[in-house]
Image 1 (tube, rainbow, N blue to C red):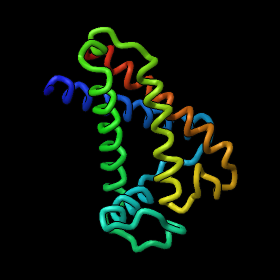
Image 2 (cartoon, rainbow, N blue to C red; image 1 turned 30 degrees about the horizontal axis):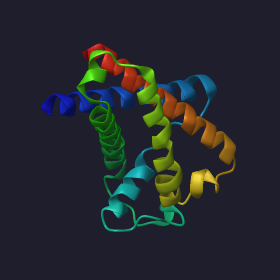
Image 3 (cartoon, rainbow, N blue to C red; image 1 turned 30 degrees about the vertical axis):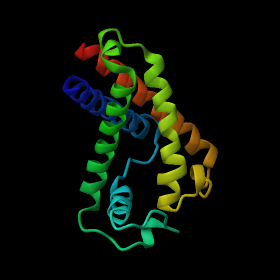
Amino acid sequence: MFELFWRGAVIGIGATVLMDIWAIVLYRVFGQPKANWAPAGRWFWHLGRGKVFHENIADAEPYANELALGWIGHYAVGILYGLILAFIVGSAWFAAPTFLPAWILGIVTVGAGWFLMQPGLGLGWAASRTPNPTKVRALNLVAHTIFAAGLYGSALLIR
């Protein structure tokens, strides 16, 4: 049990780091806006107080440490996803990791963004209130595929 816990935490961290590297590449090479975890931090703070959905998170009461909380929440969720994968696939997968289970989880986790976090931030279901929802959705799918590659790659590194 402890083995699955530490391995799940490690692959979750590794996958989140790879996803963050991808965000840097998007910014530097493709001119996408920098990742800003402050709105997510504000959302996490309000979530802890029972408020899930906002019309616009920018209009919600600010929290002094929302950027730090956003980063902590980002990594906590990545670790949680790593733990979920570890407990679903079990120890045998870590002896010979394959990409498919990591990718399936990566794609399933897009749903948390589309149907919980994005509406929670006021962006609408699956980014429907953004200027280009199709682009946001495609970038979400790619980012979570990168996350899945990080789960798989991290599992390869620690086997």
